[in-house]
Amino acid sequence: MGTINTKIYKYMSIWKTKPLSVLLSEATEDEKGLKRTLSARSLVALGVGAIIGAGLFSLTGIAAADNAGPAVTLSFILASVGCAFAGLCYAEFASMIPVAGSAYTYSYATMGEFVAWIIGWDLVLEYALGAATVAVSWSQYVDKFLQNYGIHIPNSILHGPWDTTPGIINLPSIFIICLLSVLLIRGTKESALINNILVILKVTVVIVFIGLGWGFMNSANHTPFIPVNEGEALLSSGEMSFLNFFSSDYFGHYGWSGILRGAGVVFFAFIGFDAVSTAAQEAKDPQKGMPIGILGSLIICTVLYVLFAFVLTGLENYLNFKGDASPVTTAFAKTGYTFLNSGLTIAIIAGYTSVMLVMLMGQSRVFYSMSVDGLLPKFFSTLHTKNRTPYKTNLLFMVFVSLFAGFVPVSDLGHMVSIGTLFAFCLVCIGVIVMRKTNPDAVRGFRVPFVPVFPIIGVVICLVLMAGLPIESWERLAIWMILGVVIYFFYSKKNSKLNNPE
Image 1 (cartoon, helix red, strand yellow):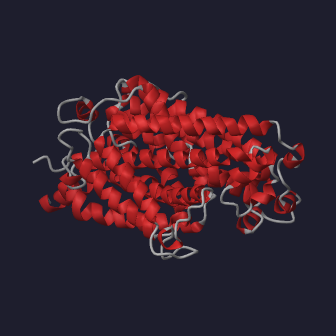
Image 2 (image 1 turned 135 degrees about the horizontal axis):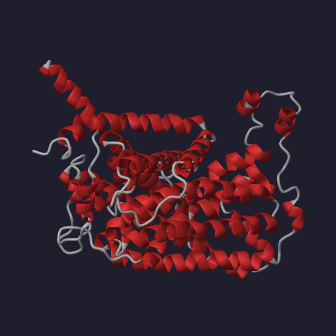
Image 3 (image 1 turned 120 degrees about the vertical axis):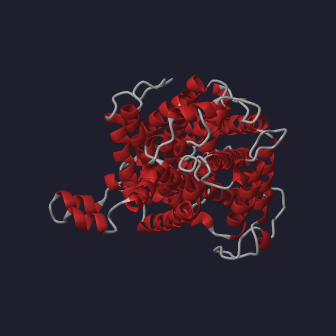
């Protein structure tokens, strides 16, 4: 009987939650903890810095040409709605549990250690692989910019060996990853200052693009606003079943299904606002600053995205964006302000740089929290004696992300990053409902209205967006999760401080 009880305890221990009191004690600043240097304004800039990047400057045209047409603006709105419900849940958690770790920490407090590990492992897809993907795009735009001045980067050091145009190594992407990692080691305050400058630069150019482009739009490019989907016509007339439509080539190719598929594609453009929550332990006033940072950055970017997409498709016919990796340059040529193309390219490079900076920071903070809990080796939570940053984690991910960016063609991993993020959003929304039941009296600087309705809506929208992604994304997510489960039971469970206090 004793053996049976021991086995039951060992099984149940993986669902043990981390007490809120313990989390709050970790949030207090002391000489060993992370520095609280970020204001609400810096947190908003951090969010905007993570959001505006590759998704806006590259995927808008692709989603318009392949999926939604001019109605890509509606795709952005749909994606932002899903992010908004998740953002509300993130804001409540961040104001209640101002600890580094984001969705990992929130899951540990609500759904137990095993779910927390899964979500922490899942966040590697969002932050590390997301940074690698953006680094590759960054290197291509740097090459375009230098070509304007007669400087050509050799193909052998601009592409990895498995790229469409194979080379030896993508050296510029490795360079920027290493540079940003060193900057993060120097300190969060210094990194935030650089990020603020980059954010101001790219937001200014986005506004300039919208302002100058508005007067050159051709209304004919917005007609029809929602291109016809022949499959939807067959579906409405009863000539095609929904199952056949869903599995056919019609689904996602214009019409309302195209808007849905487009939302799944441009969702990558919103990835990053949740990275604000990873900096909760470095915020000066997290109860007020975190909700402002998360929701403020999301609102600002949604408005800019919708206006940007509307002007983009108004300047150029959406069909001409097919296969265009730089639709912004193509559309801006219609304005006649071609002399501003270099400035536009600089802004895009700045946008990519700030995205990588925040993603690399977010990843290191998640692993820092997991290491503090014993789920990862102590190596990951070792802080620099002067800067009080997890410098060893920064160095490790500098190497890890550089390998992906330098050698692996990560352009096809965008969907993998999106599905990992949507999965995290679902768990955070569920966690709010659970925490309202288990800790109803906890102090919350911000409260999600209409619980459980709003969190449930958030889960449903995220699942719908996940359903719109290719099956390959689900397969890769499953393989990654299986690897994470193996690591948990072979190392993390045995070294967990919560389940092994001795």
